[in-house]
Length: 480
Ligand SMILES: Nc1ncnc2c1ncn2[C@@H]1O[C@H](COP(=O)(O)OP(=O)(O)OP(=O)(O)O)[C@@H](O)[C@H]1O
Ligand SMILES: [Mg+2]
Image 1 (spheres, rainbow, N blue to C red):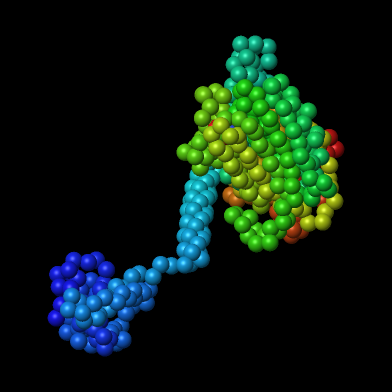
Image 2 (image 1 turned 180 degrees about the horizontal axis):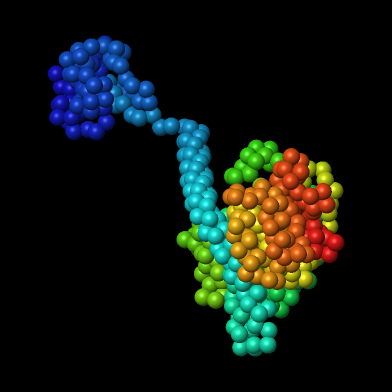
């Protein structure tokens, strides 16, 4: 016997066995036993054809003979090399799953951000409401103070300064309300291209000379269902952000495109959208900030330069309009913001219209009585925007107190159904007893049964109403 000694075989890493001329295993190494998970007695002495060689291994045969001339075969089991195709296939699979993972992670981040914004929105919405009402009272009282301080310039000056501050506060609150999706919107089928063209002049004026504006507007744009004045506001916010990001100049691009979504996508239902894109070649936003730019009060600008409410307003407004906002940015590579706005279903265009075309107030003082906080504060904001001075009350009792205090109220605008002891018509009656000639108008969300309470000639505005209706209604109540 002169097969190679066992220790030589055991020193090898590859599984090896030796086979005699009859095909019987005469020796094997530890690596082979490990691979087959078998004991030596179940291998040596058995025909090699009975070995249960796992797939993926290939036997390499070498014919040798011992020093005494006995032929034997040295068999090494090698791992089969996968084919190039198989390797390429595997690489593609890995790439695909890596991509899937990245997509999944990014979607998870988006969902988390949306959830965070949702809860911040709820919080700020509540605060904004309360402040809105407080400010309405502050502003109303200051206006009244001014009336009484005629002939007293130092007091007038103080009141004016307080009013300016209160107005700035009201503007901030308006943006917070927009963020929390609680502002009163008047959506209309709107031609965004026409709006952008109209805005260009204004945009150019708010930009420095070294910033160029380019536009790429799609042909025959779809009309979108949004509140035009708020959309204008949103685009202007984006333009100003772009300006601030390009202190050394650059290019601002405003473009529109028609997008058809066959399936829901990232916060958007399937359907037709007009995409409005504002992009700049400015400083860009680092990934550590990008996830937070829609949060209210998130700003990287110095104190006094930015309140961090621009993008919050844009976000809330677009979401409330059933669209969505997406932002892409990289440091030094500029920023792109897309607004996806839902297509208006087959309606005809109403040309872009600003609040200015509605009949405006002439600083008349209106007392708004409404027990629903949300309705009251939206009515108040709209009236203020229309240039009325507004005082608000949530009950008849509160309203009567205010009427007693303030002589200069021009119009009592009250809900028909009020919580508390007295209804709107009862309040009106008592108010007019106290002050003959006080003009009164009603709002109501109820159909006819409650209308019997108000006189036949009373002025009644049915809820829900939109800003232009309210504007016209008020004018006729004050002038008719
Ligand atoms: N186009 C842009 N390029 C670079 N950074 C931007 C851009 N737009 C927004 N940002 C970043 O996002 C932050 C938040 O923007 P947002 O418009 O909400 O607030 P703001 O511009 O700081 O203040 P405000 O708009 O209330 O005056 C900015 O402070 C800025 O860091
Ligand atoms: Mg801004």
